[in-house]
Image (cartoon, rainbow over all chains, first blue to last red; front, side, top):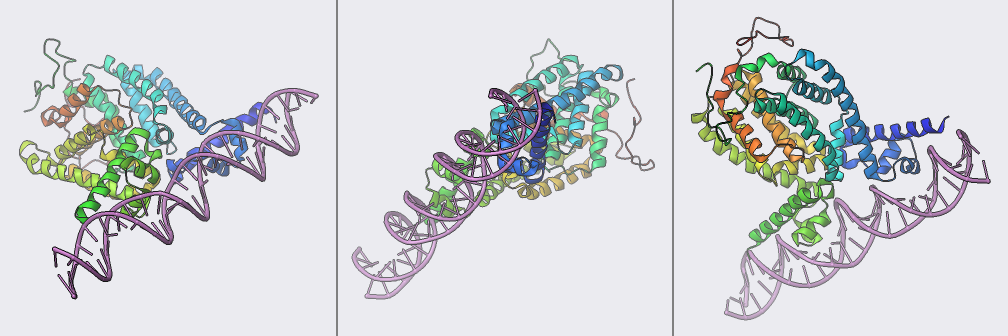
Length: 209
Length: 209
DNA sequence: CTTTACAAACCAACTAGTCGGTTTTATAAA
DNA sequence: TTTATAAAACCGACTAGTTGGTTTGTAAAG
């Protein structure tokens, strides 16, 4: 077998094993020996592909981020046509995707945080750009942020095994989050530039007493 | 010093040390030796108060849950007067409280999940009851769930060091979540009993084209 | 022959938990 | 109050096993 593909295969085997371990035994049980056992490789083999454990976690993160980055890009390409807030729509859809994949990126995130919290800085920076984009395009930025936050809440709750929602509810809620028409009713003007931006007490109730 | 209070002091010292360690070094660095070092107690002293490491985590969880339980109860007692959805209002306020405390319950949760995922079953069950209560009282249950999910999203994002929001934004978003008046505009009838409850494609757009 | 990919034995540091012993507090008889 | 005894809190060295990482060996690819 070609050397390059042999390496590739081993790397993949190791990373998939890592995800299996995290999902099955929890992030605290992710060790190099466990990866070697689970993947069938020897420890030396694993160490040849990843010089340190941190390298494994970084690879896991990179891989998952790349996967959702691609999903995100593909969705974004089409989102412009179907939504007035393509950035938000894209992020909502991507989060929904992440929430539906059981062996998800987020598991890698948790594992990374457990071992080395500062590994999170990279994903955080991307997230900040996305949030900025969402705010920039929105007629009511805070409302957009709340929709974004709700999606993340659903994702993270599910990830922690703390979601009390059925799959049907879960799907229904995401569908509603994504449906722009359901939210325009309470959009508020972007930011009354004249007023101070402190906590608005009860900014202009609009319809329905 | 009294025996009971001596024990109490040691237990407290150990648990506070645990939280410090998790917050500073990450949940993966929480070891019994680290707790002993950080708290000033000896290893034996820690082990006398907590027979196993799991006992430490359980105590951490119990303590934090009790704290927020109390906050929740106090808020709930007053919430009936100020909100049409007292259960939701209470949970939103409690989550806001948890999000504002840096050494929060959620850190304990993460630590517990890392070491022993099944420890989460207790908090999960409580959460399920709360969600049920929120749905029961709501005119538009799904909307209430989304407000709840948004709060959790803000909390968990912040907890993971992934919140791209400033404190001002954070506060503003929570204020808006809590303000019932801002949400009644898009409430939808509880559940059209006549229709099948599959994923509604675009349930009756109501106002504003 | 050189480099790459992997295997297996190995190591020092660290882990949760144990154990014998010391100090502090509690009880209560003298 | 003093003294005797027990019980609880606490200490720190120790064990058996695990950790991430290294070293040495081997076989295949180039």
